[in-house]
Image (cartoon, rainbow, N blue to C red; front, side):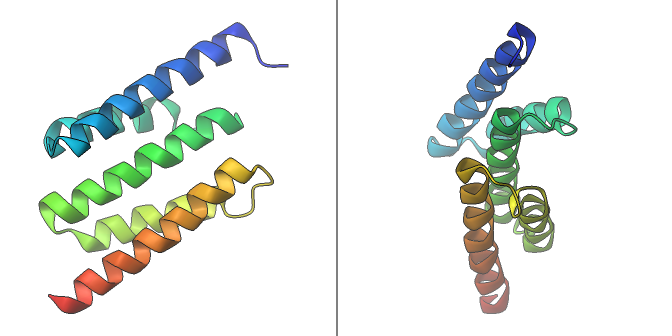
Length: 116
C-alpha cells in the first residue's frame, strides 16, 4: 500500500520532471537541467517504482542536456549506464522501458562521439 507521503512525492517528482521536459522542448536547457537535478537530488535513493520511473526520466533528461548543451557525451553515457543498472532488471514495464530508452540514447551518444 502506498502512503499519502509517497503519493505526494510521486506527484512532486512528476511535476518537476514534466516542467523540465517542457523547458527542454523550449530549448531552455540550463533551466531544464536545474529541474532534472532537483528530482535526482531528492529521489536518488528511492525504491518506490513510480518514483524510480520519474528519477530515470529525469536522469535521461539530464543525459540529453549534457550531450546537447555541453557536448559531454562521456557524462551522458555514464548516466545512461546508471539508468540501465537501476531499471534493467526491474519487473515493472515502466522501468524496463526507461532502461530501453537509456540504451537507445546511449547508442546515439556513442554515434555522436564517434562522429566528432
